[in-house]
Length: 563
Image 1: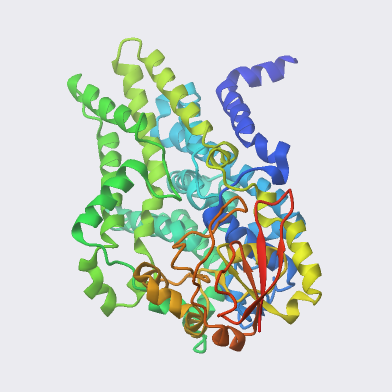
Image 2 (image 1 turned 90 degrees about the vertical axis):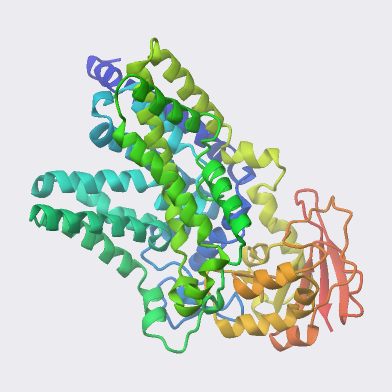
């Protein structure tokens, strides 16, 4: 090893070690490929298929008035990401799982270096370049973030670092910082988190302008510039919202927020202790006690950790806001202002993971400084937390709960058999899925009448409701789920509830499915794919055609034709 390389390693040894661990965390994607177990919810059941559809249907540059013919007889093009979404291009250039692997790699390393830079330059300068900042950043980077979000949650520390650097250095800000400001919008979601981030940055700029009478033009340009990029990226969504009077989204009927006070309080406690499924911070067993201990020991030793206390206080406030957004007491306000129904302001809780790990790093710093042999205790705690999170990589987590691998979930060979049996071009007929996610059929090129999308025409929601009305009437839970939200326009079964994955090992069957096949035919429905046998299929005017299965697929597909 040359002296220059050795010097580099010595200077950045903790970062190098963290990157090695992060590479090991990502290794299953590269070694197993499509045989990797990955998340189904809000991932394989939706986002991956959306990107694949865009890459294959040649609608990437289509205008907002165009539609994707594969879904609900024409899903508006504006319901899917625009051509300025960088992840979409990964699916254009690469096979879907390769694109997914690349996006996961970008997400993890951006999370690590973003948190490391934020801690080293603005939060804990006295620990700059230390094992503590590198270790805390590594723990953050391995969290079980929502996979399809890329930098939506994982990129928040990087965004804070970039904007705080511009705020501090003004016109002397390096070019690569400005480049980062321009790139983050291409890999993240404006609606979920960055609308709140830019709101905070804008408020910070405005307060400083008023209090200090200092315009700080570079900081303002950063806020306005990133906002402009997001607006440009989401131009189709903005067009349908403000200029297209012919499109009414199913979100117009959103009516979230019917929890009683006790359920709301339970949701607050759960979110504070365990987080949301998209932003789990894995903080209950180690991070939270360490923060409390850090505050306690600092006060006992005669200090007051202001930054730690203020940041820590934000976490219960975010959980309270998130929980009470679904409280029935807000219904009169939501009913009077439709924006409160169509836009979820509670999503600011996605800031939780970043805040928890900044607090964790600050608390460990107090332990190192205030406790005898504190560096040893802090290192042990940090290693334990990293080990806890490392085990939650997608392959470990989802293989333990026995969900399908990527290849198993989509089972392309099995559905090729179904396609071959039907013998027509998939564009010539429409299908629905029972006891399974319609995204599987969509991935395999079938044209589906059921779907899961963030937005689709309200008129279609009403049309599809006629198909499943009988099942909704039998289940108040499903009826409320569909009528007050409806993002999952699924062929529900009241016997199965909100469960959509039944493997061939299941001995269940659907005894009595209430399906309006006349309404289904009006939409063009000709085939039903069911993961379970439908016992009353003859009464529904369905003819059982064939049952398909093979060794490599976890599914057994019962094919029914509408008579």
